[in-house]
Length: 229
Ligand SMILES: *Cc1c(COP(=O)(O)O)cnc(C)c1O
Image (cartoon, rainbow, N blue to C red; front, side, top):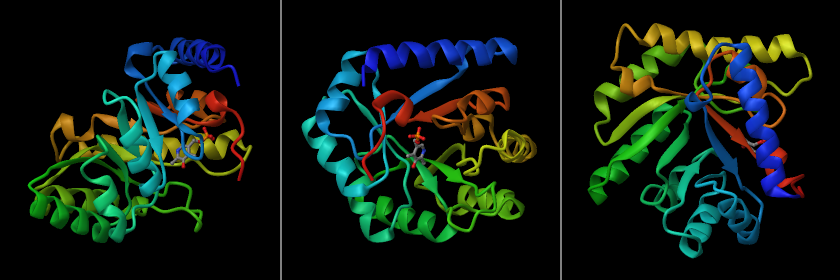
């Protein structure tokens, strides 16, 4: 994969989607999802100007962070098992995938013991697919406010979702609009900073996500090429 060329193409598409939805491209942050790719690929992307990378396995994140440039921001985007918190909490600048009160509570406890605070997003399962993690949409507001009120070492910054695995653009769009609507409802209950981020959109659906209000897209395949399974 020619990463600089791929990045240029993605940036063009971001601009086009922003133009279509009358948004500014400055509103969209690109996270390079480097999971399963080796350090060399990340170095190439770093050379092309990227500074924020997403990993979905705790030990991989820790290992890559150890050997790569110290000015990289690492986001954790996978399901966080409580016994893996120790690999992630001190290294990740954003944990995007807080998918239950249980995980949030365990992270908060860990942070308290270590004197840390952690920036997080709450993941919502907007597609209803049972294979996906995330808080149910109908429980999202209550869970969000519960975390915010009771878990003081965790700083909520917004919401994350993974679109449904389908080619049906309507279904994808409607999942993204569910996340946006939850964010909009939260506006009455919380500060703007705690809901600033709407992380949605991957290689095959980021155009739709931007049209539906995404502020953070997570791109793997379109940047690095196909992942070996
Ligand atoms: C793998 C992954 C991505 C990137 O997916 P691509 O389709 O390769 O762009 C984004 N978000 C999450 C949570 C992922 O696990």
